[in-house]
Image (cartoon, rainbow, N blue to C red):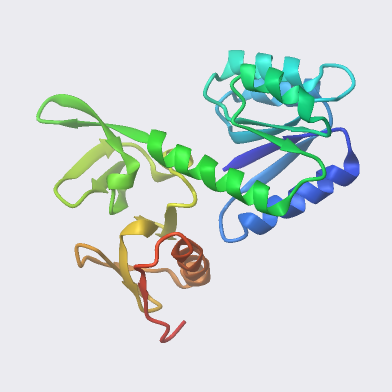
Length: 243
């Protein structure tokens, strides 16, 4: 997952990158820095759906943040934009552009975390995967998934009451999944962290009692992801032996 930060203040660039890296420390998130609206628009034009969200300074030389946001909306109208500014009076125009959030400088850590949590919640609500069942095309909410199993060029999408088979590679599906909800535990498995029943180090038990293998090199990442999820879901049963 990629997050774009567009701000011409080098000190602020470093500050917000540190905050984002800390927030997403257990997840595979790349923070890309841009110093002008022009640079960001070039990157977005090359890959309109490549960014999970954009942190965008309003007051920049050249193309300002408002105009940059308008052009981003033409490329991808669903791209969440979080405006950054030192002036609260610019918020009205920002919200007219359907801004997801408006953050004032200096950046408050707690407000940033709340904004990111809200963004993740929005992503969970909107994320859908196109599947076919009984000849009908359906849009499966990703939050319904227990886990995903990769088998060559096919994926098994396992829910509590049905398994859907789609022709797709795992690496192509991963960008569509909310990173705070899903974790790859093995080259063939991705799990919904909210559907984990227990974890013993090398084996993961899902709510349907399916036991899944965890690769040695992914055990620490999984543990961190589960602990992170516990902040919002107190029902986890995590067994610490052999961690």
